[in-house]
Length: 161
Image (cartoon, rainbow, N blue to C red; front, side, top):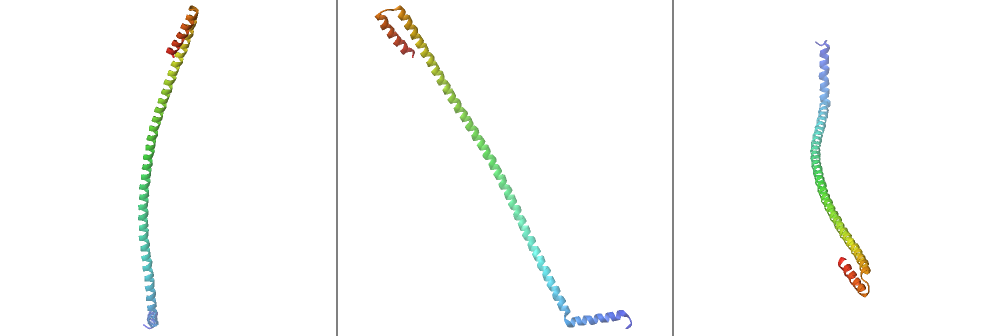
């Protein structure tokens, strides 16, 4: 039994363990393991905290995105309504403008017609006066003719104009 190498490896192992216990290696190893455990736990806690913060930020950004989308839709709807209102107002203004221009043109046409009629009447009266003056001056002679001619010309001119 003392000649076998496994025996001496076992004895050396036991001696090594006794030396380790005497020197306090087990406390050093346990302390190192405790520190490593605490560090890993702290890292896990930080990772969990960061994950929670990331989830909150994601939810916040999703909320903001949805809010921005709703706001954009509201702006688009308001712009469409405003454009329709402006188009309707422009149509009404254009129709009013056309109606006023038509009425003004009709008034100008009526005025031009009245002026043309007055001009034609005046020209006809002047022609009639000239014709009557010429006929009467050739057919009637003397002072009576001159008085009658002046009175007739004045009367015809007054009635026709």
